[in-house]
Length: 111
Image (cartoon, rainbow, N blue to C red; front, side, top):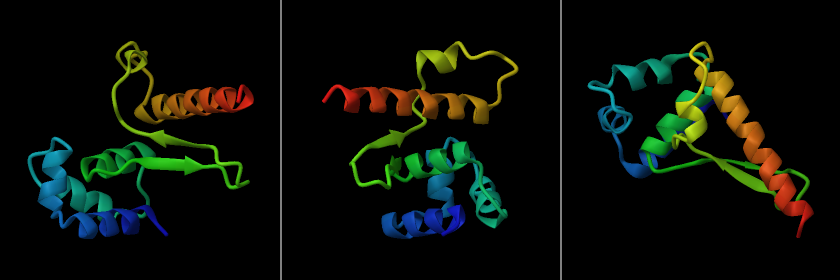
């Protein structure tokens, strides 16, 4: 399933229009959402932003069945505020995901 299909299903479930989602994302018109839905692919940070705006989180689950999972949200952290000026959103998101994975793996080891 492509990112756009996930977003469309979420919007339908929540009965949200493109304008509703755009406003929830802090945009002034629906062209932002329209552009994302028409693209071939969607950046992870944009997917997280749109899902969060619809009241959903992106959750990664360990396929091995051990039950490990973590949630990716766009909530700002102190690290985001202190991020280097040249760092892209994708690089910050990748580092955040790696940090969350490391923390969750550490928690599981101590159980």
